[in-house]
Length: 111
Length: 113
Image (cartoon, rainbow over all chains, first blue to last red; front, side):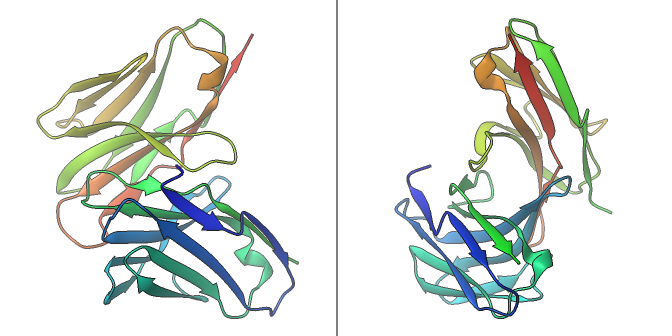
C-alpha cells in the first residue's frame, strides 16, 4: 500500500552491525506497528505505538528498539544484528483495532 | 491460550475451480476476525472483516463465513484466477488488552493454469 512506505526494501548486513528500518505513513493514523515474518511462523509483533508518546513491547521485542519520531514515522532498530534476525519486516498502521494497513516490507539478511 | 490455526498449510488448484480455506481460533473474548491476502514479496491486504454478529461477508469472488459459537471461519474463493495465488492469513482480534491481535500462519494457495 503506497500510503505506508518502508525503507530500505532490502538490506544485507553483517553480524554485530546496527541497522535501522524506517516506516512512514500518509494515512493520518495514530497507531503504528512493527512485525517480523518468518516462514511457517506467520507475523509476530515486535513493537507498537498508539501515539507519539506511547511505545509498547510486543511478543518478540528482545534485540530490537523503536522510535516514534512523529505521528507519521516509526523506525525499528537492531542494535547489534544477529543471523536469526534475518526475516521479512513489516510496518503497519491503523486508526482502530478493526484493520491494519501494511507496508511493502523490508527483507533483511544478517550474515 | 489464544491461538489461530489455519488449514491447509498449502493448496494447489486449477484455474477456474473453487476452494475453501479454514481458520479455527481460541481467542477470547472475541472482537473481530479478518482475512488478509498477501502476495509474494508484498504486505498483507485486508479482504474482509467480520464482527461477532456477522456470519458472512463477501468481497467479489471472496466470501468469508464466521461461526462464533464453534470459533471457526472459512474463506471461499469462487472461480479462481491465477492472480489468487498468494498466502491468506486469518487474524483474530480480542476485545481486551492492548496487544490484542492474533495471527494465523496462513494458507499458501497456488492456482495453476
